[in-house]
Amino acid sequence: MLVTGALGWVGAFAVAGLAAVFGEYAIGRWSAPSRVLLDKVGLSRVYRQLARDLSVVLLAVTTVRPGIGEITVLLLLPAVVWTIGVFAGAFTRMINRRNPVSALVRNIDLGPIKAAPRPPEWTSAVVGNGMAQLNILLVPAVVVAAVLGDLVPVFVAGAAAVLAAAVVGGIVALTWLRGRGQGTGKDAVLAAVQTWLDSYRPRVALYFAGPAKDVYQANMWLAPTEALDQRGVVLMRSKEAFLEMADTRLPVICVPASVDFMNLELASIRASLYAANVGANIHMLREPGMKHVFVGHGDSDKQASVNPYSKVYDEVWVAGLAGRERYARADVGVLDADIVEIGRPQLAGVHTFGAPAVDRPFTVLYAPTWEGWLDDDPYHTSLVLMGERIMNGLLKAGPGIRVIYKPHPLTGARSKAAKAVHERVVARIAAAGGDTDASSLDGPAHRVVTGRVPALFDCFNQTDLLISDISSVVSDFVQSQRPYVVANPSGLPEDEFRRKFPTARAAYLLSADCGELPKIVALTRAGDDPMTEARRDLKTYLLGPDEPNAMERFRQEITRLCR
Image 1: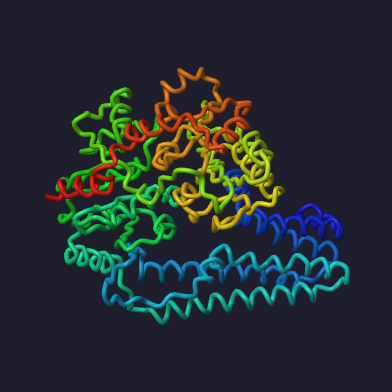
Image 2: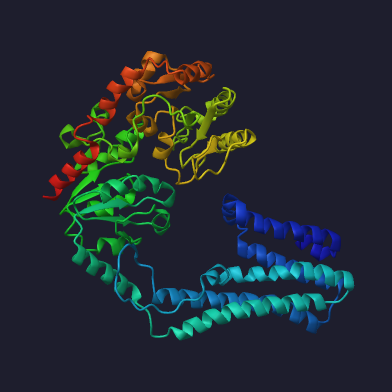
């Protein structure tokens, strides 16, 4: 745009301008990494808009050749929009300081807290530097002006941009004027939270300091915590995770700032439960008057299930003997005396079936884990090396078979290869007439489940055969006592694989070429399942005994800590 504007090439400028405007929309809508990359090399949104504004002036000067007065107006119009944006952004910051979001709550009445007026939510997206995006109107206008040899279209477009900016800026400025002398201030909100804590006196806290993408880790402990005899509260540290958390009857408090959180008085809490190992756990671990318990987000044979970080907690709760032995083998500093076997209380709703249900097709659930954080482990997930073979094999297995594909929530977060395979698997299911954005499991069609609903355990209750990786999905599915397949993409000998990964002791193993898949499907579909007894024994080893049930054991251990 700069070059064609300086040279007066109207047609080329029009093409470049269209590409620039569409590209601006595209990276904002679909490609956050591109936006980050542009910022890193100095081509920020501010720079890009300034370049577009300058190119408009250049094209107008080289084609229309205006006088000094017209040039002055031409320069002032975009400058006024920039100026309004800056002042609107400043007013917005002052408004936010009157009512800082120091804490967010759910299922809690904090009483009357007078809030200063705020401008409409949509204004936050256009104040500051964002206001200058209105100057995009000048791009098509200057092309028309160059063709006509008259700057009137530019002046009209510029005036429209100024008017729109003035309306937004006026709304923000008037809101600031209306709120003078008002507002709760940061301390008033935190004081109200503290007053509620002092009155409610929770005994158990479910603490989660992870990001929104990992909130599923906390979600799995909401129902068990709700079912306790002790008063519970969820304590969070991320606003985004707070907004993404599943529905719950528990009171929820989110305090993002570490200083604000550490200033809360939490004396009534006797047991704090941690679903994830993250750095911000330290802000809760420093509380001396409670027992700190790592409950995790699923037992598996992955290295993450024996993280050395776990030794910072007073106790580590695992599902069964498998978890205890896993820590003993890893020798990461977690004492055996600090490990408690409680089962998996989340699995109460997973049905233990006998024969496949007659009112639905034979259903195979493919639930691969994600690629993990390690760059040097190509076998962490079966998706990259085996995913397409598995899906093609299942879809070709004949009529009467339904496939549910539920990938890990973090699939593709690190690996482009994993993301690409995931997209191809989804496309393959779509081509087979499946629902690629399923919110229900009713009906015989294939399903892609990537949202929070249906939940993984809901999928379990519709599943006759699971195909997965070394992950907590396998451990949890053993509760159903239905057959399952574990992928062996590394090609380890069968005996070595089962010895290294105890959760696979009762599994059918699937090699990288997936040659065993047709036989496994046919065998289990016919009900001829030689692994039944092995799964029964493995269930006790992984998840503990049936009596007392896991929820009762969880409740007993919480009561012990709260005494």
